[in-house]
Image (cartoon, rainbow, N blue to C red; front, side, top):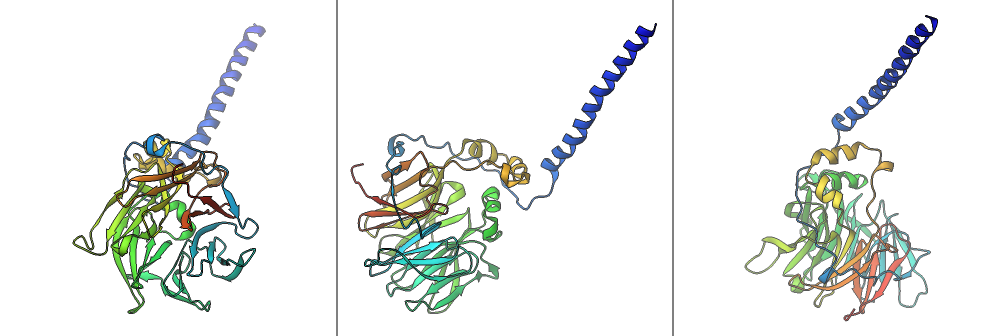
Length: 374
């Protein structure tokens, strides 16, 4: 009898333990599930179904051209996102800490010229060696040859710039630049990438009238900008749409926008023109199957990912990637680094048959000789 009572007692105790554990797990998991599904977020992601990513074959054939790329200024240039050359062939570098460095032909190392507030995202010279700066924390700026600094524009239409990203200057002095987000500031770039909304703008600044004009809004993370031949049009990269858009400035298509290159194999960042026949495009990273097949088509998963602490979020794959495009959008150069030794590539500029590669995280600037027959 005692044995039977003991058996029943053990069964009841085991039942209680099992269900206690279940209750504890339910009590922990239920709030976590509710948090992932319902906690308010700062983004409003929209559904988008990308085209199937092109395979890394053919014009995008995988290669290791950039794997052993040379570097310059490793001790002095951490996080140099963009590079520009003045009329004396001196190289200027804009760093993530706001410092601007110059490397003259006769110097054996770069010299720091000045420091601005916040990171430097884009730079371009005009014909008189005025340096125009895309400074996301401040706005569009100009640095004179005397190093006198002036804030030119910080808003348009009453809307402050969130992420002033890149800039280029036309022969007539008109300044064209991008604002990646009219919703989020540069400290919240991740928000804009996860929302992937039409929050970007293409703008023009007129030095004579001190007026900023909106050319096009509704862009998806408007990033790099580059004027084309004879300033007839400009290109602007839409990072979260894997494409490059063209905006016409002259001719019968003036003020019209169309797609220059669709369905790229990665996220386009900086764009530059070599003033002859090639647009250089820096791809920040390659396409992610999870992003294309799950996160973009299903906004709820982007909201859930946004609620996860940043330390647990998946990171983009390190991959160095640079493309050269002809004036009709044909791929003419394809340089890659699957190892990601120098990545992400945020900008690429051609000067005297060399490519200068900028990066937001790498130390130094990549230096690569252009090889037409690679």
